[in-house]
Length: 154
Image 1 (tube, rainbow, N blue to C red):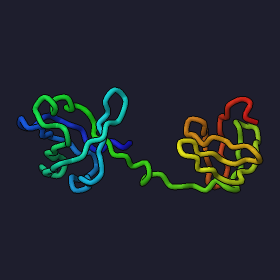
Image 2: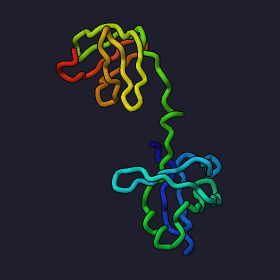
Image 3: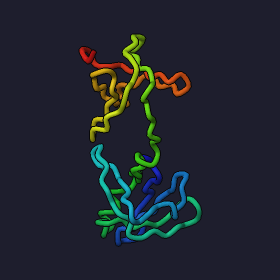
Image 4: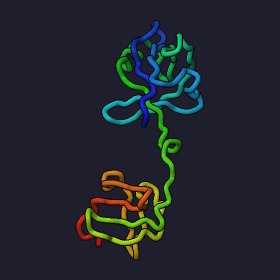
């Protein structure tokens, strides 16, 4: 999730919001795609019903299900996030790279299994979970990836 705006204050009594844009323009927000506002650590999707630019760094927006001043006030101070994971991440083919567990050589990566929610690297007969918490470093120049793997995996 990428923060793209901050909800500065409510605007009127019908749920409109004044937002401050962060390095984007109002026209960059697509009403067909949801934006997210975090509640209790979880991103909640909203759709933009209307957006009116106010200069280059602010806009008045109306989000779905914010139909009153009370609804709008609940959002004030929160960030608006976009789910840009699919667009921002480049798919890297690790096939042929060398995998290390810390300083210990594990072997050559022979493939990739795109298991939904649990992508894995193939090293020999073992599937190694490819999760950002396990990756220590990756060097495209030397084609090496260093991970901190769970004990007993190999």
